[in-house]
Length: 136
Image (cartoon, rainbow, N blue to C red; front, side, top):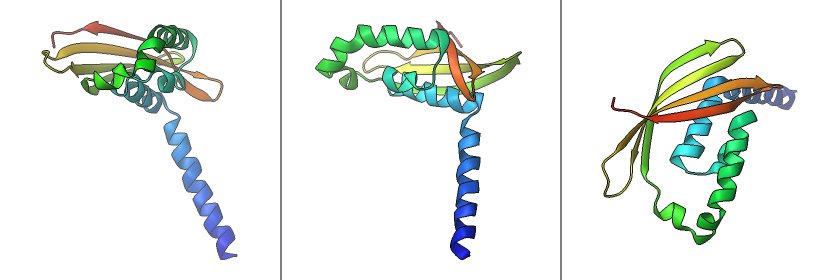
């Protein structure tokens, strides 16, 4: 009986944790980590649908030779970002980020990133994203 109750409690905790991860903010956060921080379009692809997915598939084809040579990991810059605003828009949720990219031996680059999320089936996905230079 104790084990049945323990399993039930563990299942409830696991389910609660998974449902918290299926939010616009959570999927945008995982996308930002994979795409901008890790520079891993393949991993970022897991969190996308629609136009964002098409864009990443094109990028993956374009960077395949670089990935084979291993030069991406060596050139990885320091990346920091903060969520500045969340805006519901009908079925979509827009998330605005301030992004700072600091390559080696180069001044930091400031960007504004817009992530557009939508629930596709049962999962929130990044359906589009844009970035623009920022002067902050």
